[in-house]
Image 1: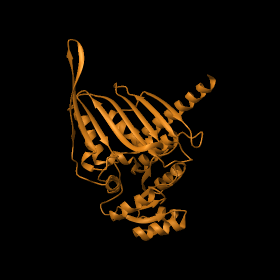
Image 2: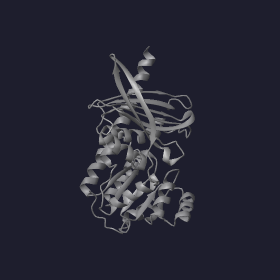
Image 3: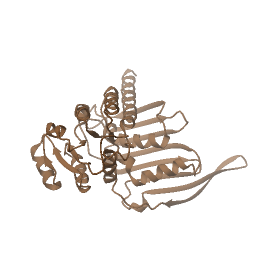
Image 4: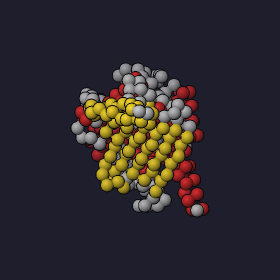
Length: 335
């Protein structure tokens, strides 16, 4: 549980206002909680400050200011550890955009420092805060449709192609986080395959397979060279398939339940399919919900849903999948 913040003290500084940081700045501003903007790009900082009303300040100023209890980090992943540790050392609560860090030892150090300081360490796994996913998770956990058996996730698009990280590290943290939440545990086996076409050796297509101690299996596909956008998470239970179709533009059709039964006729399995039933869920912007949750952590009202330990669990899967891809490439070169 986060300590040291009180209701009404939830002011934050957003460090990094590039592609995603500017969205974070906008949402914290709309929540009345944005105090400062920090970015090495002075023009970008000034632009976002003008849009949001945040004050452009240096990181050192933010760390020294007791009126800013929270630091939101949306810089390049390789800088996360240094910035987050400095903020924790200064007594700040910390939100870090995914991935938490790039090394498990660094994740361990941040978790230990946050625990020692009594500060919240939260990771920006946005889709864990999506109202549709939260409903999907509740349905699966309720056991209404029997045991969860299999999960698959597709996050496919044409772009945004990166040159500093492969598509798995860019796209899959969200899917891994959701899959781990649905399974309720970390996998005991991770395999993966990747293919690089645009800027080798950076993989443009990655497929990851997970097996869990409780028997659940999962597959995650990521691609930024796919001809059309697809964002789908599917949970197959004994008696129904639950589908979160985030690429569906109509909010009321984002979550569907397709009930089914498999009956034996003369010893032969015969499927009985029911119609897809859509579940209407009240609209909330997922990012604003996530930002509001961090403010709740600042006020000591909540512990982070996606805390450092959850971020470390996602990182472990990413690292194991990276090792599996490298092994598959080495074996392929030997044949």
